[in-house]
Amino acid sequence: MLLTRASEYALLSLDTIRNTDKPIGAEQLAKELNFPKSFLAKILQSLAKAGILESKKGAHGGFIMAREASNITLAEVIIAAEGKPPAIFDCTQYADACPNGAIGMCSISPFLTNFQRKIDTFLKELTLEDI
Image (cartoon, rainbow, N blue to C red):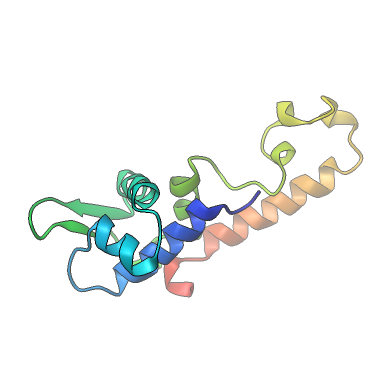
């Protein structure tokens, strides 16, 4: 699956954070967006670890953008949120993920691989500023 709820929450959270002047905490963000706090907190930490967000500590702490939206690709966000590169089909990322164990003999493998490359390129070209 290309995008899960983690990617959706990451993108919606980043859109909110980038339009906020001060740090916003996970609890406040979860309440504002009506997301489960614990799940959102994990996503925000992953985005911070990837250098997309910056975490500020203290009473007025929370998350702020670490970079401009124009310098953050959707591919980066999805990889940070999902923990792996986006894949249309499992077999397009890893040859050993072929459900039949016959990637070399698969008649649609070249199409799927080409399709995946186009999606990868598209996500690397799109930035948060574009959405």
